[in-house]
Length: 339
Ligand SMILES: NC(=O)c1ccc[n+]([C@@H]2O[C@H](COP(=O)([O-])OP(=O)(O)OC[C@H]3O[C@@H](n4cnc5c(N)ncnc54)[C@H](O)[C@@H]3O)[C@@H](O)[C@H]2O)c1
Image 1: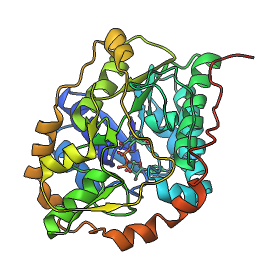
Image 2: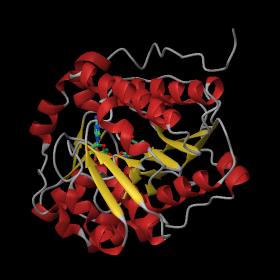
Image 3: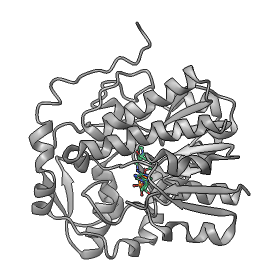
Image 4: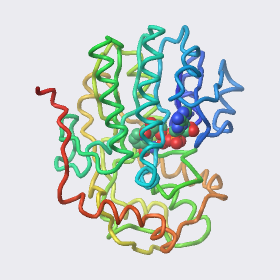
């Protein structure tokens, strides 16, 4: 079972599971995912798609019968809309996670892998960031993913549902969203490059991100499902961090600079010692190779929105309004297990 399987990362995971010969059921409400993302998998193997909202327990529960592994990726996954519509994010990412956990428990699934997010670390002070770094979600998306992760840990502890949580760092690759809200830098840059418009670099471009290629993420999910780990939380990153200026140099093109945004880290960089030690997982695709794959498929972004300085200023207005003090007073959620 892959929830969110019609989305960007979920569909790559489905491809991998089908390639490995598994029977796969996808639950997705198609709010952001697309059936087209599943075309090749459905031709190649045994794939069923259920169009349903994961927070609708009666609708999803029967589909968990005889499922061995659940990969829970369904979520609303953008920052700005989460600031504007926190209840929508809570319903999909928290209520949805509880419903999936309960359905998994009702049918005694053997393992549940949760797609957690590096955004839980907020403005991390320790770089590379280990799993026991302070948890400081800076906006509702990060908060709902963190709360979802807490539920997953709780179901693992209390109900003995064998769960593993993987904190993904800045995932990129083909099928990354080409529509909708202003968001991940790759899609923004590729659409701008195709349209011959300048690339909109936030701040001085020296901020860096742990860009992780999507097939490496899918491999980590499968490794976690095949393991006998229970209740572990692991970072999944590229083992490196790359400045936006370096990404620009790989993509090529003119640049225009935008104001630096509050609540955004100067660097994201996963400490991947734990997943390497427990699962033997290492990333396989370098940023240089990954960018080349993206450039080879740049036509996918032909109809994507082309953001510019003024439309980004408009789209991020709430971001500046609500997050402007957040960097100076980070609230840490105590997940240390202390009473
Ligand atoms: N992309 C990243 O860099 C990144 C980083 C960290 C964590 N994650 C997590 O990985 C997962 C997948 O993210 P993605 O980047 O592929 O995003 P995506 O939007 O492409 O995929 C999410 C999928 O979930 C579906 N969905 C949303 N709400 C739903 C609901 N209520 N019921 C059923 N389906 C629903 C969407 O239609 C979509 O297909 C998410 O849980 C996200 O939080 C992503």
